Image 1 (cartoon, rainbow, N blue to C red):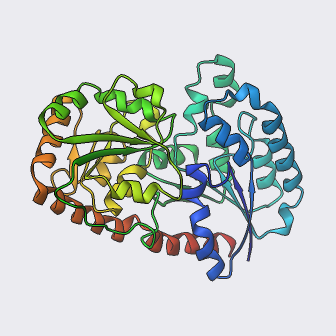
Image 2: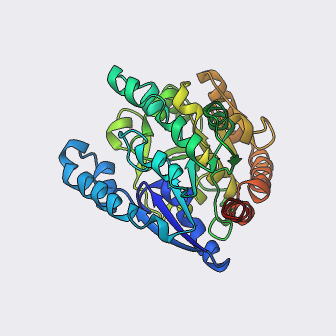
Length: 355
């Protein structure tokens, strides 16, 4: 079987890497040939991470769109097309509609509320022209794969033919459990990107308070230093090669969020990473977080600052509680949020769609 995978970007983009690229070795083992065509180059993604404006990178954007136009002339050479979110961002769903019209089978995947980029956009013209774009892409597809129930509800409203939930997952062979040294300084950690570092400010009042009570470091991996410069948070650079090792150095993983529509579409990947390393977690009770965390068993849900302080106090004070919650979290990942489990479901979906 030959599959054309149209991703947003390459391995520098977390969504492309997590939702698709980590599955490729498994698909190859199962006899599924996947040709990958990314819209935006690694150079573009790296520039955005470094804080360069999109306006200064128009040449890379135009090149990406041109390369995508060229690959679309080859779609009939494949048994299946897998689309990561949309073929051309900020352009109506003409191509997806055409694929459906000429009988090209395609699957579309979402791990974010991409539709809110359009239907909640500040510009009324974008809302008018593109507000229902993602709904159309879902409706024209053979199958919509989504990462959580909030996204599933939108797919249902769109009139999608078939909807399958595949959560964001980790490879258990990569995410090993490393027992920490109980005598070392405690570390409360966060991992993300410059664009999501803003969520750390949702609980900005707790860092100095807890640092005055405990021998604890707060670490943010992948955050922009300017975002948290006034807070006692150590910022470390992110790389795919070091992310697991850095998470393994944490004692507690955190995931604060803003309570808005976009956040309801998130798939809780941070929590899954933390739990895979057998860490207890504390997170905002928003979206899929409420599904992943069983409060008091594998972590705590905390909304107000005093709830965050109370949850972290318990964990920082009690090593046995950290161990208990970490073991429960790891078990959950092994059963539901691992590449080893979900790759079989993904393979089944592919063969059912094609056959």
